[in-house]
Length: 293
Image (cartoon, rainbow, N blue to C red; front, side):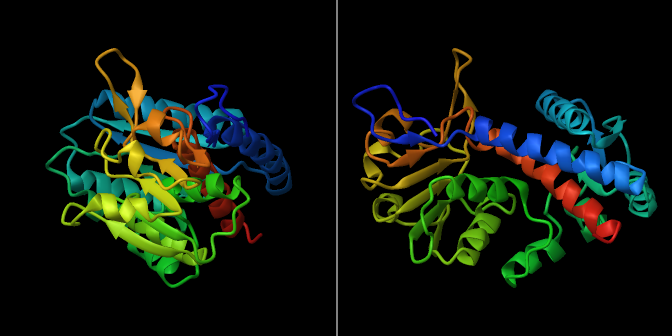
């Protein structure tokens, strides 16, 4: 990990891009061995419904990640008017396909489709996004199986600090099913003392100021003020927002926070690269379970 060059900044950068590249190199070697041993590569099926530009970029990145790692990719790009019944039928087919180890439905889906019904239709053993209630329940029961990718990636970044999380005061800003809630469960699993804040929370500042670790995942630009960060804290910024000049920023006021924190993730280049890497890791995990390793 590198230290910031600006003398006014003390935080060390948690470089998700570098960690992601390191993990992918290691996984690529493992995938090559698994493919040779079992006569097929791990397989990931991605379902994209409609023409959402951001979703198309995400799917391209996932497909590219598969190719570079030697994972077989099966893309299903369907028109926006596709019915929920048709999608459920496709998921059923993919559940039964022995070449497919992971199934991912790219969110958001068009309004006429219930995303929860799609997620719950996926075989939990192929739920590489970690969104299925079974997998969330396993994490809550301290018996994790396939884990939600972004929180799992955050935990890998926290490992890079070398800090023992037992007893650490952690504040998760945001309570979404995709990040906030499973993030809290991951931190509990690691022995931390966890507070989850959300839109009904009173005095967010007071909660953040006492935190040894802040995970900002509210999806609101600059919500967490830099001066709120406890000196020496670890800051994980999951938020990503595009500014008018085309640059990206997060949920945390980075420049001020970086003068106070011990470790901080940048935006971009922090949590983002880890999400797809953990998706690929989950696909390999699912493959190994399916072939009995």
